Length: 103
Image 1: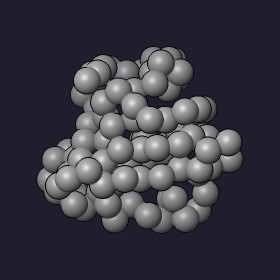
Image 2: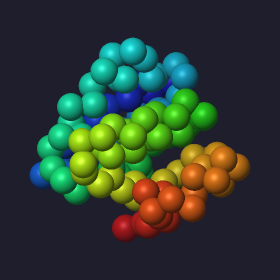
Image 3: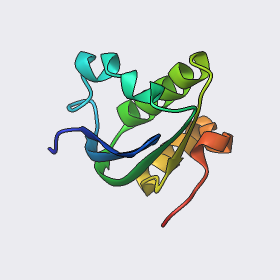
Image 4: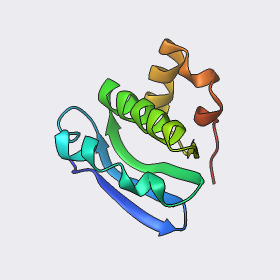
């Protein structure tokens, strides 16, 4: 298990490093949404995510809700295949937030 780290790479650009799982997402993670106020356009790169499960998808949905409430736009790139498959099962892959992009 690899801990969850949110790394700031520039204004509005963040990289998630580690696991997005039930084991790594805790109440502290859910309270630490302040990074989403960094800019009106937020990009979260998931290319360094090692493992994920439905808790990772739930966290992403909460980030979307939070950014919507704060009148900003959030987009994810380099979404791991496992997470994208979960998004497809729930229909969230049709959202502009879940656009498949790779660098």
